[in-house]
Length: 233
Image 1 (cartoon, rainbow, N blue to C red):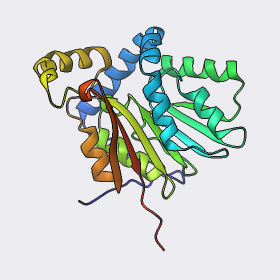
Image 2 (cartoon, one colour):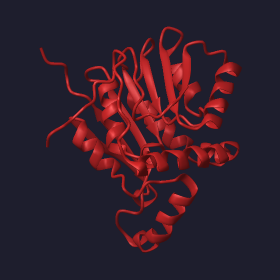
Image 3 (cartoon, one colour):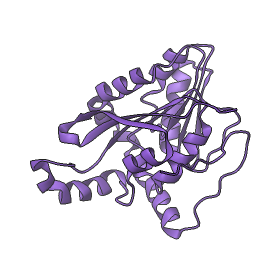
């Protein structure tokens, strides 16, 4: 399968897809997650073991540079900061100003001078230097265009760097499928989940390695570990 990536390092600019539906979805996400920013505690607690397991799989080392896509209120920032240490750097991106504000409060409270949160669209964000690892926790499935976001992340990673993804979907098999119509409506109402996205297909199309390494709740939650190709001469 042909793989495509966007060159996103060295300050080049990505164009937003020329699609009114894209902009409408992005604005709905901003409005929705601004509203939920004060009520994220339950999700933070419920998903903590899965998030911790995902970060473990990235094998982040002291001094690494790590990107988080869709950081929300910053629930992963303390762990990521601990892993990269004082010599590393964490850069996080989110489109909700309220979520970004809460993430920045965590940074200020923690005194983490090497952690930065940017309020912008993860699909078009550009970075000056490549990252050693990336994380997308409960974020890709709510993007206006998951494939474009994955391409952007791919282009922002160094050679052999991993991307870890934790996300949700309707039940892929088993008796839980009977409630999928309700699940889809709930996810769209609660999180602006995008039914047009196929996160797994996007990851497999863009990354040379992409493996589902863990599932929970009958496949409703899943963890994927991807890796970028080795650099060629």
